[in-house]
Length: 227
Ligand code: CA
Image (tube, rainbow, N blue to C red; front, side, top):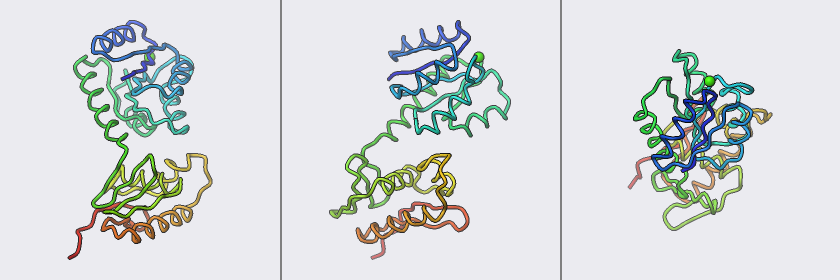
């Protein structure tokens, strides 16, 4: 597991590097925001520890830029400011967790382990909900012995719904995740893709359904099979 540390307090960055190396992680540390973005963009890291106050580009701007570029590497925000507003801003910008300085080594290591477990689940090849499954590498949607290949956007949408099965996914969030923040995609574009997916799911005969949550978005649900 390769970890990037972007932290301008050099003694802290070096101490973290040392601790993580002792725990058999590969670590790179950078002390400037611009380098943080540059390294993070490489996409080679499994986790980024990101300080908020950095010279050059600040942590939140780095995070927003990465998420906008669809770089989904898990990020733990390190913040000296433990105020709720900073934590909310960090989570809103797409961080997965945060640690308020000063934090204990034990807590940091526990958070890293928790996030890596989560991202391992996230990276599973086959996602499923009820009797519906989807293979991310072949883009095949399956139910029992039947399968169908999905188009690219359908695949991305299905993957998003499966990763969030049971949760309501607002339309704005779907647009942001699949088409990006700057896209001019409208709600009816999503509706079209949802209807394609529903047709394919009906064809496969799955009992899993995409439920419309009026005025909000969609929710993937494994329904009880009727006898
Ligand atoms: Ca700092």
